[in-house]
Image 1 (spheres, rainbow, N blue to C red):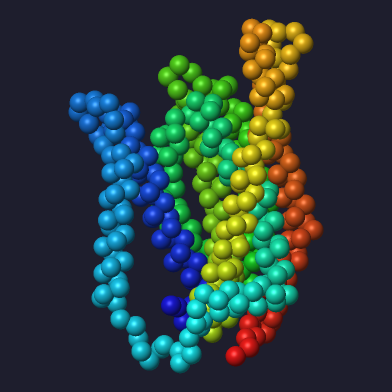
Image 2: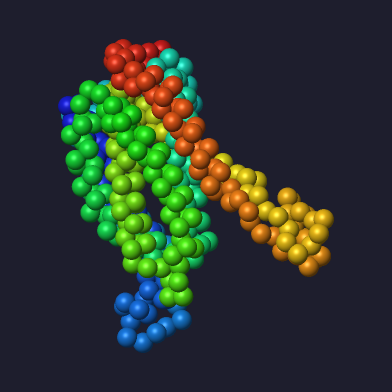
Length: 347
């Protein structure tokens, strides 16, 4: 959709739009669905439920989605002068054949392998921290509200970062932001550890939330620096003749590189957690069955080492190892000529 000289700004358009969508679909919904939030800030008389339910929310936005896409289909006309004479693909089979030929190219294959492992170091911080904070007593609606001050920052950040990523070397920004984001993973672990120490009967002190907001703001700066850089790079190297298929493939692999480590991180928290059976001699809490036996014997399982902290340290070590050994190789991909990214199709 953008001209070739402005293609580096594609990531800015994408991230600003996604920020607005995240705010409406996550922050706003959690606030309006929470009975305590609505009773405290939006109602004069308390009610047992929030202003909206999940069913109402999904129905409303489903209707909006259907109406807007239908209007686009009927009212938006293609510019016939800009439509290429030859279609990009002629069907599903041709599309997958094209994707396979793209992946086989050395530059693309190297990019895929590196980006699939680049975000392992962030998995514990990104996937588990929020759940652990809720587990320590931080209300989930408060966590959602903490994202509200971030919305202006998240809209402004891509505009600022695009000045550095729209040029010929967007991956430099990715590389420079990575160590700071890794260190913030340890800071998030500290926030979880600190939560029970400052918790009082009425909840958490204001200064704790202030530290959380500052930490989240710094995290967003590093996250958006890396996100916008990757999107800009993908737009830059995508073959314009098959831009849609090509860029979708690169972005899908980039997203997968963040999703699979988060899934593994969630799964590994329990196996890495160390528990002991208190009040019942000769019992352990190593497995679910052992936990039941401990409880049946009158004991209780006490966590001596939370797997989240173990995982946080391991992830940061793996992240710095990637940054030190594979990061320079990843940066060199932007020095490849356009011919390295051109897809050679057989007619």
